[in-house]
Amino acid sequence: MLRIVLLGPPGAGKGTQAERLAAELGVPHISTGDILRQAVAKGTELGLRAKEIMESGQLVSDEIMLGIIRERLARPDSQRGFILDGYPRTIPQAEALDGLLSECAEPPVVIVNMELDREELVRRIAGRRSCPNCGAVYNVYSQPPRRQGVCDVCQAGLMQRADDHEETVRKRLDVYDRQTRPLLDHYAGRLTRVDGQGAPDAVFERLTELVRAAAGLRQGHRT
Ligand code: AP5
Image (cartoon, rainbow, N blue to C red; front, side, top):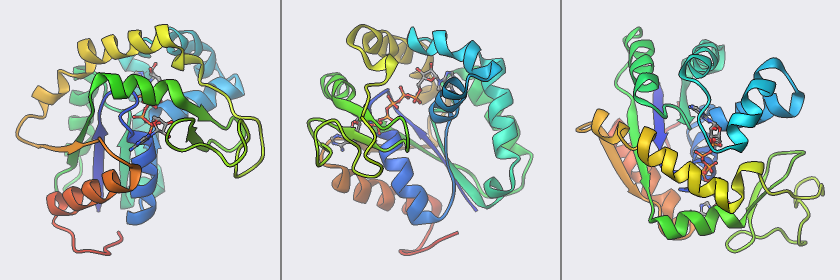
């Protein structure tokens, strides 16, 4: 069973790489940001509570997030492993996760931190466009759709995320520095660091190599 926790600041490429890695390893990609955005889109009670918080660049409460992650990790597909993207984001979330994972006797989790300088983070976030219909993610600078503003997969009109506007991005990066960066000390000695610079293919190659080494996997292994 392969369990991976993907850490990194907003825009580091966690979602992009987690999706590819999940397909490569045959485990689910669990993104707390995606779970919250789906709840907002459906207008559920969770979505109504999360919408304003997300749009202001702040974090949803630890209590709500723990409920979400506990429920998601209990589902059958998570029993063969998973890639966590966007959780944990605070020390209490990390402690709660340590508790959840210590309940099973499987080998340790691979914890990866994707690193990228601030200027490139801002550029990537500013250029991100997403499909509200199928969730595909593009970038006007690095991964543009074939037709400007139109999803390659389902032809819906692309949108900018509500929290990707410049002022909110700066706030998200400050929140990251204050509340999430301390996780690097929490996981000190257990952390695999990956340089997020470069084209997505190059980052993916670097990431898979490091994950395989950290997990002791052979090339081509699927769970
Ligand atoms: P979430 O969706 O998790 O956002 P995030 O962590 O801020 O990360 P992003 O989605 O912005 O970036 P990413 O690292 O996934 O980068 P991506 O691959 O898209 O969370 C959103 C909000 O939900 C939070 O602010 C919070 O309010 C709430 N939330 C979520 N989890 C929570 C939790 N646990 N606790 C509390 N609140 C929580 O790439 C970015 C762009 O760059 C894309 O356009 C992509 O195409 C492009 N790109 C990717 N890789 C490359 C590359 N190598 N070269 C060039 N371009 C690239």
